[in-house]
Image (tube, rainbow, N blue to C red; front, side):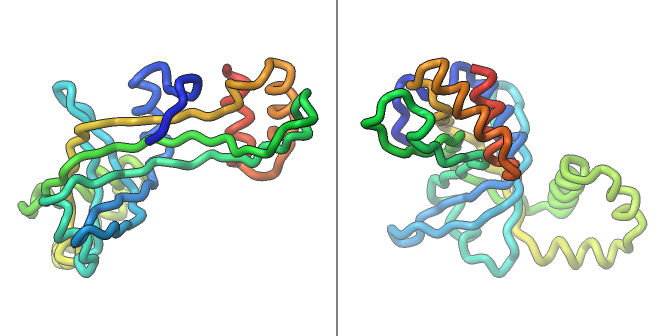
Length: 201
């Protein structure tokens, strides 16, 4: 990822928090030199200084065949906003886009053991909808095993983490205030989130 110095994340922990908050990401893997991609919800865990991303493909998704032999890129990107030059002091200015994104690289390992696959599913439930666990626990073992046969679960250990937080740091405080004032009035939650990022500078 190209990251101008002023747009770098200050702390690694901030990247991790962003990934947890915006956990629906795109995993990109190469197949015969060409990229293939899938959008998936990810769970991030930290253990002994290692970051691990866990998710699952549908069994029919051919991308699962390539994630163990190739390095994959997982792109976490959510809040973004168009920024008009009307907010700048200089007339000779051009439009831009503010956004936040984190790229995680690593090789994945497919989860083969049935009990481990079950833990993956339950971990996803606990993260995204804890209240559903009670209903899940009432479902038959036959149904659960059928569900697990239809997925390919995997763990991806992160080997490199890159991030960019482009939120008008290269503008004056007065210009940033105008941008934030405008964006926070938007009905778009993504634009409101960018306004919040700018306010926190």
